[in-house]
Length: 267
Image (cartoon, rainbow, N blue to C red):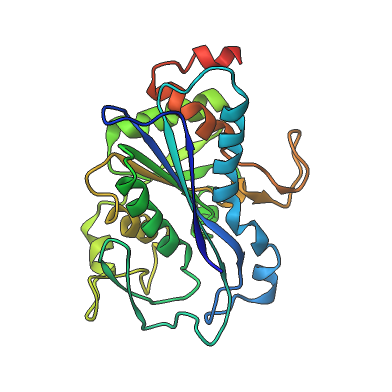
């Protein structure tokens, strides 16, 4: 059954800058009623790579002997996306944790629904800066290939901090825009506050724009990690298959936020 995992590192108080991490944890993605073709489904146990990367970062923080100066709250929504008599249907209207009504267009766009509630929850728990991470769209693979993850955000300085952490980790991000009015138009709904997906092109960008609606009031960024979660090609660092993508970027981020980015290199 679906659940929401909450995990903490470091002490949070009312004056803290708090990093909130949200990771997509779809433990298997069949596509739901909008069923994926068989060949596209075979590796969909990797659709929890965003969640796994966050857990990897928490594991790394737990073995360090110094306390985090920027505390971290992790929110990991966990679910399977399967056909079922109670499954979401195209045309359904779902009310989200914060009250927003969302029209379902395609049940294979399930990850952004989990992330949206995760973003709302981590804000409620006290996060002042939010980063969500997911194997969200194949469109990111088409756009950026194997070597980059897509980065979308609402705050210039926050974007730079994330880039700094990725640079220290030797991992590659590429920034993309999500504020164009055409994206907002493509998500207009006649029966709800917003559609969760568009009918036409721009699937990666419309997903980012959709998530940005739930991140108001805080610096926020979204990483679509795609083949950084699973790659059929082996590299010098890992065999083919699960990659542990962006664990090191996430690990370094609170140290960069505390202006300790170079200090952590000693570890």
